Length: 84
Image (tube, rainbow, N blue to C red; front, side):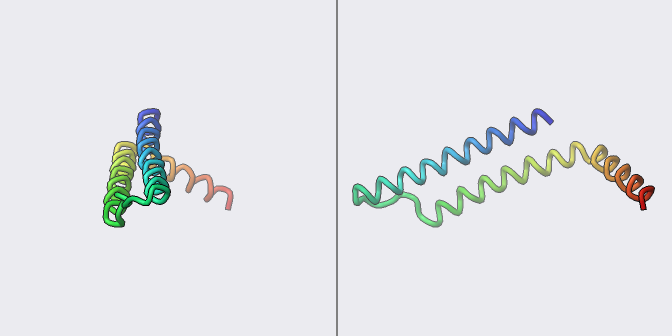
């Protein structure tokens, strides 16, 4: 779990760095009256890249821990059944 959390931290930091760069570049383009290098297409590429990385991490985590997650769900169903 620690490895997964660290990977999420790294991805979040990277995503935030790109977001802050976009804001900074856009503000500079507006204030200096220069073209903004961030097009919709480029933003879409960045968004898809981060989303794909996040999904790969999530899917890998779920696959590696599938047995434990299913056991926990099974235990939860037994407890809920006993309480009904």
